[in-house]
Image 1: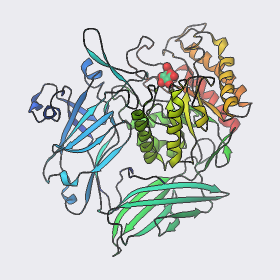
Image 2: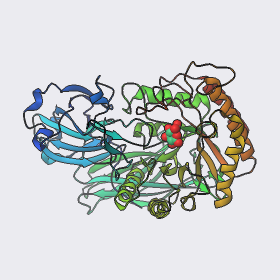
Image 3: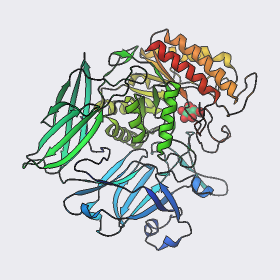
Image 4: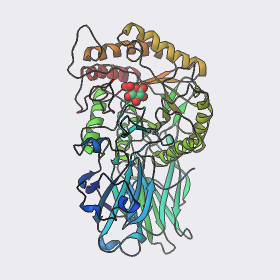
Length: 594
Ligand code: GCB
């Protein structure tokens, strides 16, 4: 087991929680001295101070280019009070769901936490930094990307001297405090982490678990309970680690593979001191399921799965990548409407609240680190890449929805130096998780690639009919089939398509089909479907994921019209013709295969 506590903050019998979400003060132009950066120079009267909602990306809230394309640090700040009942015995923690890209957090002008690599939570104890009265929290956020950040970017000096952030990936580099911020309490001795691994044995589910406690670890006792969805106790123990057997278990099944998909149990830990006083209590949802794979098949609970899904983005009007509960529910309602059973968290880890939906609904997740278009391989980059995988694993390890780790999207695997690099990256994730297969969404062909040997399931991104042979739909079937076959023959592993698609401008209708029209997008899909059906007949093709679920914002680019328009849905989450077309296919596949 690998551990390190990043448990989702929950109110329990022993833990309390206060949200710091809401309107914060925001300051854009804080380059300069350290004092100026953290706002000690009296520049709080600065005209640049705005109100900024948390959680949200900051870029699309103001009206200026300076804000949208900001390079360098920005400052968020607000005051808060700690509930009076929290003073005394408890530890007080501060936790961010994510800050993009890096954060320095000051409590009452003392450095409290730092974090790099956005999209992942971080937490730390701040008890000793707090006042009884008003406290001030300041967060310095920096969206600058370099050759060793994950993902990479660079600062370009343009003619005339202006500096701008540039990057090779096409989604907009949103920044800010884009997920919830909370304060919560634990006892001095507390449950730091819980690891759960499940296997399936006939009708039984076996739950291996290990809880990790920090603080004074002597003379503790444990009460472990497993509760079913009706809150009935179905398993109990008094040890901090072990294996519990659940008879007639309700397994976690994907959507449309079972009439009760996404069944979740609760793993409850109660920690007592030597006087039998309850110190800490925490409840972790989990599902009972077992994954397996070989050279042709990917199974869940012994049944082969075929992935019908999407590449997606956390992206919407105004809030950018900011957590938005109405959007999350709408998106998952659309996915069920369309009959999808899977998506990849392209190209970075998604909010925990999104992952919760996938767990509950039985949506299978290909969980991706923020490594996109990786190039200029270096040791520093490798260390950051590995760290992002460790943090992703620690956050998501207990999620039944996570059925695969994606360790990269479209890295430059045609370069010989990528071989050593992906050898290390894959060994790293394998060193702490052997229960899930790993993949890369690869764009370089099987013939030049150096990464396939390290992967369990091969992800293929293919744009024949769009970036290759744009407009020539006659090339799609053979182009798609030969690439997928090439991967399988070279490595003898299952293959799935992690991206294919075409841009379509909503409402643009041209007959006969023409690039960018809704007709062309649908026609291209119908050609890919022919290829996928032929590939499925060969017995090693395990899924199709269209690019993209919805239209999304990109950096300024002459290949984009107001963003990337490969969505089945518009950015406002209304269907294009393609969504109706995909829905027919996904429901047909679901009925045929399950
Ligand atoms: C890709 C990338 C994805 C892009 C997509 C496109 O290969 O993985 O991030 O958005 O192509 O539409 O260009």
